Structures are given as structure tokens and as C-alpha cells.
Amino acid sequence: MRYWLERGLSFFDRAFLLVAQVAIVLMMVTICTDSLGRYLFNRPLRGAYEVTSLYLMVVLVFMAMPATYASGGHIRLDLFRSSLARLPGMIPERLNALLAACAFGLVAWYAGGEAIDRFMQRRTTLGIIQFPLYWSYVWVPVGCTLLALRLALEVIFPQKPPAADPGGAHLPAHEAGGDDDTGQGRAGR
Image (tube, rainbow, N blue to C red):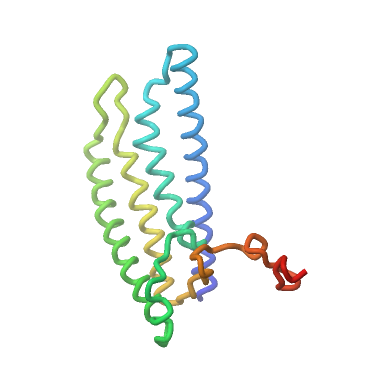
């Protein structure tokens, strides 16, 4: 059962991450076009700031959150890990995931209600170009819901967090000086 749940969530993680990647490329193109137009031709791209800040930034942050968590890319505090690791059943990891799942579930619930309200009101920005604001409210509950589901899966089937080196950095073996074949560092050769 865990395999199928993980596989389903991973599919959505990858799909959401692809949306975030498209958003960052569009953000880069929009900002570069605006800058070139402003400084070379004295004709800035109208609405570049609004598109970037109201749409693309929100998409980038909230669509990338679930995949970032799944890959271990979020910051983890290791203050009490050594003393809490002795508890059976990975209780600290489960408790942490439960609290985070509740928090992101509440954010998703509240943001979902706000998104529905904004869609019903059809709010737009003020200015020469009136951008519909309601589309920017969609991405918060979608991303938070997937992250809450991933955290709920972590409560049921906890995984050990990645081990840290003494300096606190998480480095792959080839960057930390280890060799995948022999397990020896550069000094051991």
C-alpha cells in the first residue's frame, strides 16, 4: 500500500515541480524582457512586475514545496536528534510530520476558502492593466494540500531523515571525498 501511495504522490510531486520549473523560466524571460526593453529601448514590458510577483512567484514557491520536502531539500534542525533517536517507533519524526501536516492542512483549508471567495468576487488589480487576482490564490491550497498529504504519509510510514556530517552539511559521497566503489577518501588512495 505504501508503494502505491508513494508512487501516486511522487507523480504529483513531479508534475507540480514541472509547473514550478516552467514558472521560473517564464519569470526569467519576463524579467529579462522587461529589463532589456526598459534600458535599451526605453519601453518596459507593461505588467511584468505584476505577473512576476502575483502569479509566477506564487506558482514557483507553492508548486515546488512538496517535491522539495520529498527530496529532503528543506532545512532540518538537528538539535535533539541524537537524544530523541533512542525513542522507539520513530516517534519524533512522526510527531514532527503530524504537526507539519496539520499546519499545512490548515493553511490549505483556509487558502482554499480564500481562493473560492476570490473566484466568486472576480477581483482584479487596479491600474492600466487589470490583472485577475483570483488565479494567484489557486496555487497556495493546491501546493499545501499535496505537502500535507505527503506529511500524512510520513506519519504512517516514517523515513529516517538524512544523516548529517559533523559540519552539518549533507554532501554526496563524491563531493565529501568518498569513493563509491571502495568507500575510501582521497587520502586512502
